[in-house]
Image 1 (cartoon, rainbow, N blue to C red):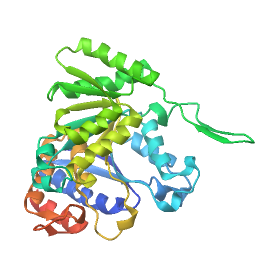
Image 2: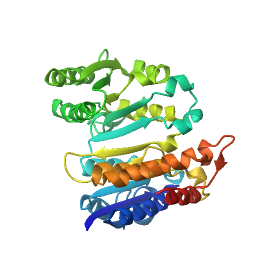
Image 3: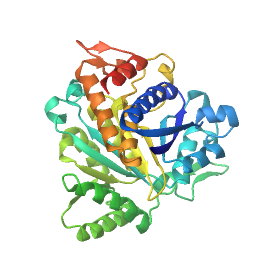
Image 4: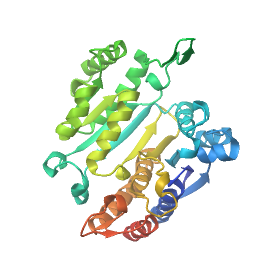
Length: 357
C-alpha cells in the first residue's frame, strides 16, 4: 500500500476548524483509493509563540523537511501584532518558506459557475476567468539585504532592498513556462521595468527564456496596469509571472474575482523536497471558534497536495468534484451566502463534502 507522510499545520484563528474538515476528507479519500496517509500535527505562528516563544520551532521545521507534503491552514493573531518583527507569526511562515526553499508560489484562480453571482464584478467580465499566478517567494524585497532602520537626532529612516539575481529569475520563470506548456501557452510577466533596475533584469531574463521557448507567447505588463487589467478584463490572462512583492498584491486581487478569498488554494514548491499547500486567506480571528469559516480553500489546497505533492490524481479529482457537487446543491458558508441558497457552518459543509465523495 502506498504511504504518504503529511505534516498538518493548523496554525491560528480558524486554522484548526478548517484543518479538521480537510483531514476528515483526506482520510476518506485514502480509504477509497487504497493508500495510507500518516499525519503529524505541529505548531506554527501565534500558537507556536504562545507555547515556545518562537513562530517556527525547530522541531516543526524538521518535521516538515522529513515529510512528503505539508498542509497548512492559516497564521496570525491580533494579540501578537505588537511583537518585534522577528517574533511575529508571519515571520514563522517566511522562515518556513526559506528553510524549505519554497521559491515558487502557484495560485490558480478559476470561476466556479455555481458561484459566479458571488463575484463583485459583472458576470460577463469574470465568466471565462481561468488563470494561474506564479509568484517568486523566497527573494525580492521581503528577503533582500540590507534592511532595517537608521536613527538620528533629527529623524528615523526605514529601508528595504529589492534584489534578484539572474538565477533566481530563471528559476521561477522556468516554472511559469512549464505550466504554460500545458495550458493556453501564454505568459504575462509583470514588472516595473520603467522605474526599477531589478525589473529591467527580470524582463531581460524572461525574454531570454522566451527565445528558447518559441511555442509560448510572452508579453510584459507594468504592475500598475496589471492591477487595473485584472479588474477590467481578467480573462485575458492565462499564466501570470511576477516577483514576490507584486505577486503578493496581485494574487489577492485575482482571488477576489471569484467572489470570496475563501475559495482559493495555493501551492509553494521547491526543486526538490516537500511542497507546502495552503489557502490564500488569513486566520480570520473575528470568526474563530464560531463554526462560520469557509473550509473550501483548505479543501482545495488538500486537492492540490494530492495532485502535485503526492501524485494521487484520482483522489484529487474526487475531492474537487465533491466541492463542485456541494456548491451545485446550493449549500454555502456565510461568506458566499445569498438567496435562495442554504447556509451551513464549517463542520456541516465538511459533512456534505464527505457524503459527496
